[in-house]
Image (cartoon, rainbow, N blue to C red):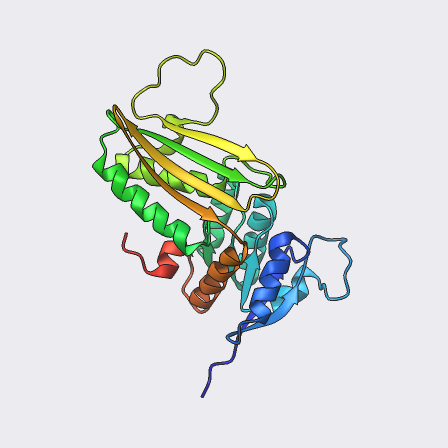
Length: 258
């Protein structure tokens, strides 16, 4: 007997990714678009309240804001479900702690990017960071996005920074240089630099450069269409439905070795 489709609710349904997600879910026979909701006070014929949406869903896909995602995670945990796929970025420590706490009760997939190619880039960056001595190889991360993106560096850029720092055996924040301006002095060994561009309709560009005396290695990924993020979020929703509580990421979904 065929499995019934997984019922999906879309948070932030009036947003750019919310609309893209709704189209992608409706096109996938393994899923059913059960409900769409947006922030309180939003008006649209097909919107329902958050309570109604959660009651109708097996999984909620959420590309909204860090505060809204953390609040939604808490709310879902208190009611015992549904599962969550979170694509928001730019979380602060308190919001991350809230999501981690909710994941003790419900399964949550949270990722800085839902792109297969980007997650492959993370794995390649980890390999390079293991091989290149930070005393000799400087790490620089570049990212560019459209003018409407509200956080910087992007969650994906920070994910790449974490990949470098983790393989070097250090925490990211103490070695991250997010801004350079004026007379900054010589670059300290082990620093991880970030550069950010915001403009136009750029979907997403990320690169990690390892720079040594006389040579440069650059690993990069370019997003051409948001549909790739929707495809990844659908894969995450299919994977997380019925999972035990826990906080997962796309590398769990894709079965990548750690």
